[in-house]
Length: 155
Image (tube, rainbow, N blue to C red; front, side, top):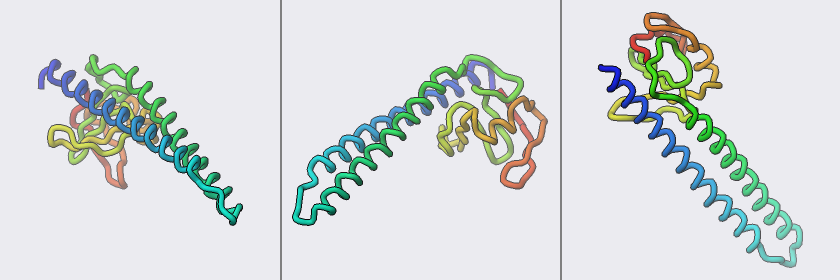
């Protein structure tokens, strides 16, 4: 794979991540609006406690989705700052690491994604695995899922 192809692949990974996070933010916005509407539409009944409980539950749900939205916005901001224009020789934010059976992209905590028929684990730079990989080079080993892995390719 040429340097241009490596950079294009990582840029595609980053763009996929940005799209996923933006989708999560939009979904959280919808869920916040739905929770607020549900809380507002809770009708006062003769069982006053039921009314108050329903409104409280609606507000708790809204708060939960608001927190998720804020977490996604922070993740989006971190991902936007990741450079995919460099070919790295050590594992760090923005690097792609390929091992037998697994590939990792240190950029955002989005879990397992399938990109161009390849499974890639998107790792947050703050995750324990990303911290374990940090500074490793091609040929280095690390423990993942109780199995020793060898870094075959890193860029």
